[in-house]
Image 1 (tube, one colour):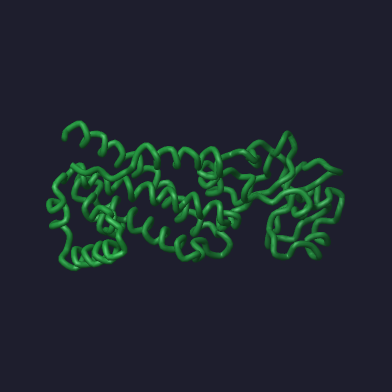
Image 2 (image 1 turned 90 degrees about the vertical axis):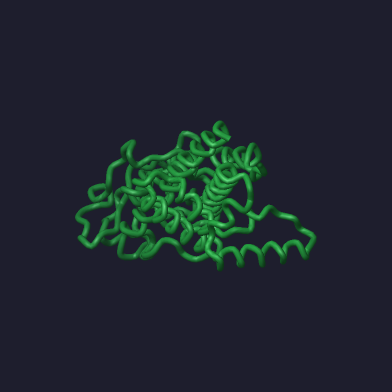
Amino acid sequence: MTEVRLSPELDRAMEALETSFHVRLIATFGEELLCAPVEAPAEEWLGVNGAEFDQFPVRRGAETIGVLLRSPERPRGTVGDAMMRLSEALLVSADLPLTKLIPELRNRPFRLVLRGGRIDGLVTRSDLLKIPVRMVLFAIITHLEQIMADVIVRQWPIESEWFNRLATGRQENSRKKLAGLQERRMDPQLIEVTEFSDKRDLCRLLIEAGGKNRFEADMNGLRDLRDSLAHAATFLTNDGEAASIESFVSKFESALVWIRELNALRGRLGVEK
């Protein structure tokens, strides 16, 4: 049996995502951050400041004490009167991995960022569009695809066993890609030139009956997300409005779930075969 070259290199790379890609890479800090003074009249201050923003850290001197939110309702009194007061639920560490931040932004569109014992940053849903997040997401989906490939070759050790299960058009597409690479003196395994959807269809055959439709739907969503990332397209709409962020976070979480489940299946196939 020929296994896809998956571990330990890719596993170590995935672990590096946790240690290298943190909130501090996408948050706004210091002088770049527009803050509202606690004593300013709230309505007047919002009228002349940051029309493109919806959340503003509130400062008393150098201390952050809350967040002023832009909303359809007219705020009354001072910024201090109108602000959302500081609480633990509003905070994240600058060192929090991006993989942990993404679910945190599902229910609240922002977090104040604690850095070096001081609250001096802000991260919002729109920051999820930045390059570090795109890199993390693309790596996670690539990791999932590699696991699917390894599951396939473990289940069907003889190449023709899995290849003949693909539709004729999909087989021809893979043969053309392989021939093109071989002309350039490259020699990949046949499984490596299959599309994400090919691996989806083959792995679907191995998923228990009750989970097949969910698996296919989740893989379709992740394929679309991966394509958006690859082409630098916007995968959130309306600056991360609720329905869009819910869909995005659900896709992200489904990738983690299927990485875990397919890795377990891969392990069982390794024992059985």
